[in-house]
Image (cartoon, rainbow, N blue to C red; front, side):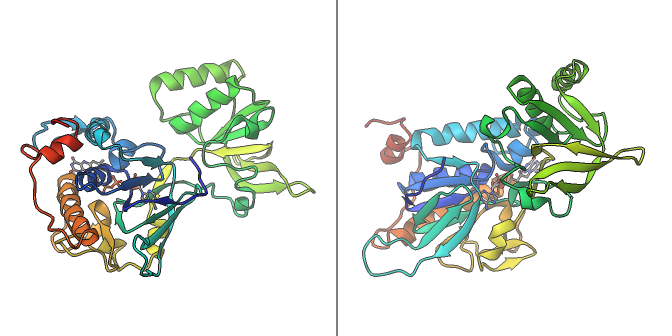
Amino acid sequence: MTSTSPIRTDTVVIGAGPVGLYQAFQLALHELGVHVVDGLAHAGGQCAELYPHKPIYDLPGIPACTGQELTQRLLRQLAPLRVPLHLGQIVTALQRLTRDDAAGSPRFRLQTDGGLVFLCDAVVVAAGVGAFLPRKVPVPGLEAWEGRQIHYRDVGPEVWAGRRVVIMGGTDAAATLALRLADGGAADVTLLHRSDRFAIDATLDAELQSAIGAGWVRLCLGQPVAAIAADDGRLEALEIATADDQRLLLPLDVLLPRLGLSPQLGPIADWGLALERKHLVVEVEGFRTSEPGIHAVGDINTYPGKRKLIVCGFHEATLAAFAIAQALRPAERIVLEYTTTSARLQRLLGVGPD
Ligand SMILES: Cc1cc2nc3c(=O)[nH]c(=O)nc-3n(C[C@H](O)[C@H](O)[C@H](O)COP(=O)(O)OP(=O)(O)OC[C@H]3O[C@@H](n4cnc5c(N)ncnc54)[C@H](O)[C@@H]3O)c2cc1C
């Protein structure tokens, strides 16, 4: 989703990992407006990206639950509160606005790489180990064609239909894309990988091997070492070093690298917040960072005794929500209410009388 008009809200949560999702739940229970932004195309952070099918055994009251199941449960718990999730959007800029005296003027402006702008009064950074960014092709100078002929994120048929496409990588994403494009109108699909073995799902591997056997997908074994530009400046080919140390030219119109994702702190390091070994330093009453109005919860923060566990992140999110609610409603006393007994909370959750 892209938009040019800013989204005005009370709070923005950066990160839709388990802690970011629970943070949104807690903020919404305080009836604060909240939007969640994540660079991945799906919610769940590390649970969904790194261990979707592995069981977690130390969540209170849940003897065993996979990373994917936990994500689904958190999303289901959040659903009645109708919190908008903006996925596939990396927050690249966070800026403090000069507060004028006009009531309702926002304190922060956030911008994403997809063109979304948020104006808000408090920010919670729940960015875990950082934004999962696509691994880049290690060929010098290749970045000059990014966004024109080289695309690290999903693109529509206008980019590849009728063209010679090279997909690079041995990942599930690379294999799935090769099959989809071979079936969907690319002139020519080549899968470039350093070996003929793919560490991918067995069914997908079987489909890929049969597409290669039928000639729908061409397999090129080797590593790119140089980019070859045409006279008009277009990327014309990649020079490939093969396993037996030969060199060959692989002509192409479009390169779609799918080499996997790696977490990087990225823009968060540039926001002027106090850091200790790439973690945001917080206090433990409201998980405030060095910058008033910006809080940090979950794996991204550090404080004496910090443990990178989901349950610790849930505790931090709960206290951060109380601190934010109090700061945004200074005239009110924010009191503790139980979901078991509070009619207000039950109404919000859609389980009590209207
Ligand atoms: C293999 C493995 C097993 C684990 N097992 C357990 C276990 O059994 N029990 C347990 O308690 N913990 C376990 N953990 C740790 C647990 O997964 C983490 O503590 C938890 O995921 C932290 O949640 P989080 O929401 O803080 O961060 P993450 O899960 O890392 O989510 C952060 C999200 O922020 C997004 N993001 C970052 N920067 C930006 C940005 N600039 N813009 C937009 N989005 C951004 C990322 O894309 C990501 O989705 C395990 C971890 C691993 C790797």
